[in-house]
Image (cartoon, rainbow, N blue to C red; front, side):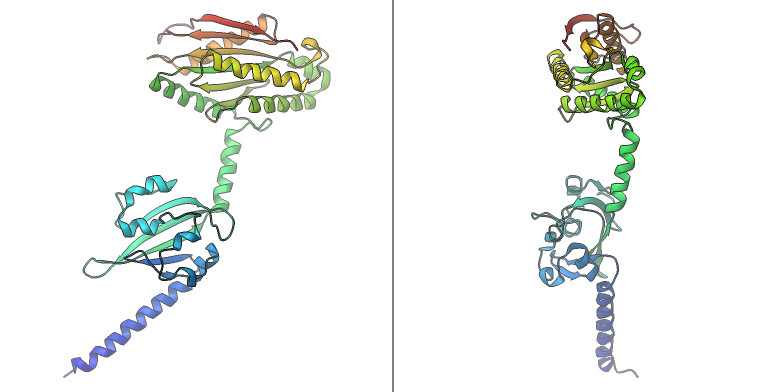
Length: 349
């Protein structure tokens, strides 16, 4: 007959041994890992986590100060949200995250972290999940981290290549089309005007014929710099439309706002004074077509683009180195471009 009293210590010893083995194993995992207890205090801060954050375990064990490894000011880590059952806060705290309503096997999130002890920023992929006892009571929460900074930066570089013009660094045609479509929908939803400026380099073929295509490329890069500097608001976009044509999208801009941008462009072009022996006044100049529209039901963004193109044509026909602005207020789904000519401006070279 087995003596249960004699057997109890043996079971306790086995359990203790298993626990210490598990803790030791976690300490030496190559994956950065920390564990919080049910009150949000640090139980384990493994060596890989020390290397990732620059924070030694001795500074955080038994405390709720683990945020110091990742942020300059106190804010919850993903494990804290699990401990505190605050999964609804994931939306405001993480740029990428799981559906907070589906967390039965843990949650995933991604974020840029400041890493104050290292003095750098890292993009971390974060997984966190609870550990329960046999009665369903939460004992602890485990958080593991992966440094994805190199991958994220490479991805961002590829996205920039896909959305930027290779010569000028401005947005490319694809980026412009996507941005215009979104800006048009937003303008219709918010009942706000949208302005486009189409910009063409005057006598650019003659410039290439006179100075060569390499000089032509340099000229386009200089003009792109002027446009990027003159189109100031974060919500605006300036793009290379094709060849020597550029275009600017100005959300929530009326005629006054669009013409202010146009004047800045002309002023900066005059200051740059790119020589062009066969151009207007011996310099490289620009013609611009401005279109102002308020989206109506059934209208497409192409209507505003067509209007800007027509305004540009009028500016070129009117003598170049000038802008023409056209406005549309009522355009049906099947109507051709109808407009009111509201302003014409010439500019001295």
